[in-house]
Structure formats: C-alpha cells, structure tokens
Image (tube, rainbow, N blue to C red; front, side):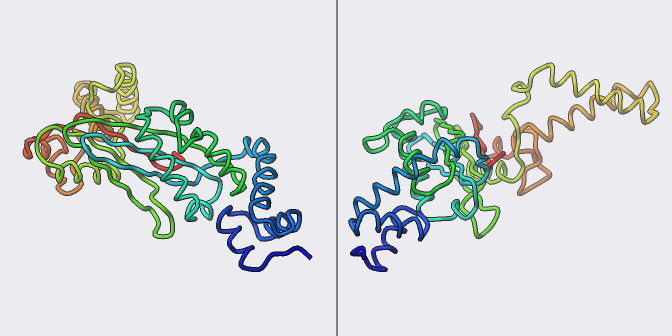
Length: 275
C-alpha cells in the first residue's frame, strides 16, 4: 500500500485543484511521494490541454488595479463558474494581473508572452489548465494612463468574483468624480467616450434606419428631418459616455457632471466576463 495519508490527499488537492480520484491515483503511482505525484498530475493534465482547446471558456473574472496615474484591467476566463469562484483561479488571475502591470501590456498577445515569475503568462495558464482541468485563457487586457486613473469592479452575483471591470482616466477634479463615472460605466455600458469616435458609416446607417422606421410609421414628410435627428441623437445618448444621463442624477449628462467637477474624461475601458 502506498505510503500517504488523508492529509496528503487533501494537501495535494488544495495545491493542484485536481479531483480526489486523480490525486489518489497519482499518489499510488508515485508511492506516496508528494512532489512526484504533483508532477504526474501536471504531466497527465498537460496531455489534456490540446483536447481542451476547442472548448468554450465563458465564465471567469475580471481583475484590475489603478495607482500612480495608470491602471490595468484583465479578463481571465474558464469553463465553469465552479472554477471561477475558487481560490486557486483567483490567485491565478492575480498573477496574470501582476504580470500585465509589470509588462505594461496593452493586448492579450503581448501579455501571454510576458514574464510571470520565471515563466511566461502562457506557461502559467498551461500549468493551470493541467492542474485545474479546464480551459483557461486571457481574453482581454486594457491599460490606461492619466492624471487620475481609477478602477471599479462589480459583482453581478454575490457567489461569484467580479464580472464587470472598469477603468477611467480623467484630468482635473478629483478621484471621487472619476469613481462615480466608473460606477456609471459599469451600469450603463457606453460604447465610446465621445460621438466623434463613432464611425460616420454607423451614424449614416442609424439615419437610414430612423428614416425608414418613420416612413413605415406614416410620419408626415415635413416632420421627417426632425424625427430622424431626434432618433440619431437618441442613439448617441445611449452609446456615448459623455452624453448619457448620469446614473446618480438623470437630469445631468455625464459630461455635465464632469464639467461641474472641473474634470475631463480622457479614456475608459469596460470588460464584462464572456461578452
């Protein structure tokens, strides 16, 4: 009989996140040698990484940190919410975030190649794939710099880690108004900062749709220009951060709130897990 105890099984499970039967088999094969058993689990797990590549990773979490005029936001995905809310996955996301901050990565590709304690982030994920037994990937990363940069994380369920993450960069004012705007972004999901960031072809398409809809509704010809402009402006108010009604005071736009605080938004990023 292999020389290991129930405490050894528990310790190895906690260290690797592998299933109980897999841990017992590895300990049997390693004749109770914990280090060798861990290596066995890793090797067997890595054999399954290729098989997991075709799976869908739509659960996970977002992690963020902002300080000293810069902020970083990452989205790390896994297959199930069970893994997403586990301590091991959370610790992995913290390592990925730390690597993103250190490397100043602005996209997933550069982050995967970045150093993470002597190995690349991609190797870190491969190891996690092996021990946890699920497809794990970094989907997105964002980095902002500015006079003030704040981060905000929001839980859509108390049982899960943060599913929505926001970074906001501002000039002037103070961090409190930036944080209010970050919370607004989390709730109202704007697409762009200002309307000048929306492609002209998108605006023209909205005009065509507005005109076709108005004609279908039988609106009088003379009223069409005003109706069309009203509906296009409605599109802007829905998608442009500075033109959205502010979450804490719908009588003011986000732009107006920033103006009154002596602040100007210079950029933002918003991630929602799996979207």
